[in-house]
Image (tube, rainbow, N blue to C red; front, side):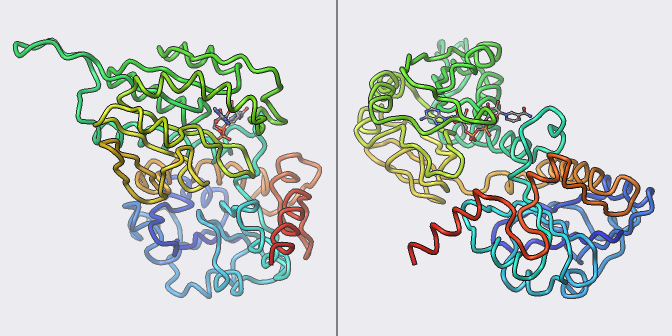
Length: 381
Ligand code: NAD
């Protein structure tokens, strides 16, 4: 089997799909690995380190895309990249199938067998392949650091000769993987942390990190299949807003991470709530790219409204490319191991991980959710 590591061409994408450490393990098993020249540069992995791990450096992208059995990458492929793939070739990466279903259609019509890292099931067996979680952890950590840097106050309590400084109050909204890492990071920095989520099951995890869980009793089921949140009713939204409003007003920093898979992010912080915050407060909105959890968020921008700074960062994992790539590479290589246990590709579609992750095979779009999303896009045009 020949694996190709593509150089990312998406603006701002600094991660690389496989790092030299992981490649050394693959090449020892007899797998041939080709790495596009400069693929690891933005993540500080030089071509020399890849060569030392047993990889071959390829200067011409068309050769890499067209000749390997499996192309691995991070960001979704562009049309020009897809058109270089050979029929029956395998592609693994974050393919954003629900956000951009036309890419999936292109992959199907090219005859590519595509695997989407977003579709790795959230099960114990698949945990080491769960790239959404590994990258969400990076984003949650970085969101807290961005908030701390933008906050005009200390996070920890300080007792100094110049007086006692009270710790900052941080409110985290959405306590999934990113939110929990944001809580842990804010706690490590010494802030007083509160957190809120519509899934009551996260209460214990929040408390075990030393944060207070803000509870809202809702009269409906908030958890969907796979443990994800479901979209809640207007009445439930109103109830949650009533409760969270006072916590937002009291906070120095609000970090929002709430998502509902396949949907626009829920608005949790209204304009009115922003205006009720103290000047100098900071909001970091991790859902900026999905429409934002704050009504005033602009993706990729810092907005200041009556002294409140609203930061809408884009692709935070790419801002920590060394560890983000290392973790992603571990996720991808574990999936590769499952697909090719003896170094040769055997796609066993009876395995739930292979089945659920595969988007396209032999010209077909296999995922019903993606087919529906594609129909919805076509209907809009
Ligand atoms: P996510 O990124 O889809 O959403 C982030 C958080 O936002 C979730 O906790 C969600 O409940 C919350 N949220 C959604 N709507 C909200 C609203 N209106 N108000 C407040 N909060 C809202 O989620 P995720 O971090 O990817 O994790 C989702 C689930 O998957 C969790 O149950 C997590 O424990 C589970 N998970 C399981 C595994 C595994 O078993 N291997 C791995 C990772 C995650």
